[in-house]
Amino acid sequence: MSEKLLKSILGGLKILLMLVGTYVCYLIILGDGVDPDTGAQIPAEGSISFGLRLTYALMISSLVFWALFAALNILLNLKKNIVTLIGFALFAILCFIAYSMSSDAMLESWKYKDPNMFTPSNAKWSDAGLILMYIFSAITIFLIFAGEVWSLIKRFSK
Image 1: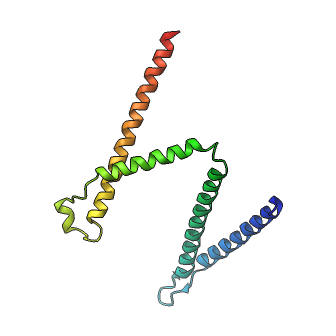
Image 2: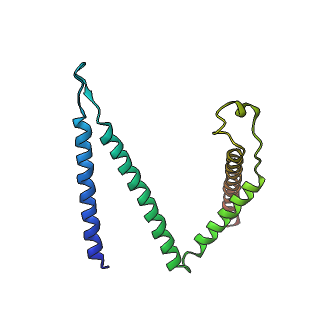
Image 3: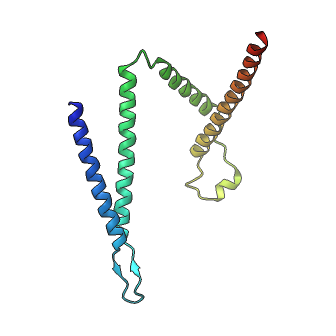
């Protein structure tokens, strides 16, 4: 597919989405009618829910296309992106370490709240997220300290 054809198709899709969005906004502003008892305008709930669903669909499709194009770019330029792949691998290793260190123990007060919200699995993932945050915070502080020490060594070595 040529770049000019792709640009034309995407431009047409953009115009179509603008027209649909404008029409949905018009329907929302117009409302569903007037309440005969109070004379107040009834909100257009069907149009609002359609607009929200359209927004969700566009956001999800944008994320999927972004992820696909990013993965395709990484795979097509493997030599250039080896550092990125090493970063992904290190992140996966740190996630595995954090999940392995986490506990599924729950506080006693959690058991009396919403039983579907607080489960041992949720507690384990939450604990893994906290441990991962602690690991990244420690790495960040170490790198800041090492950078300052390195700049001092470079300044005084001249």
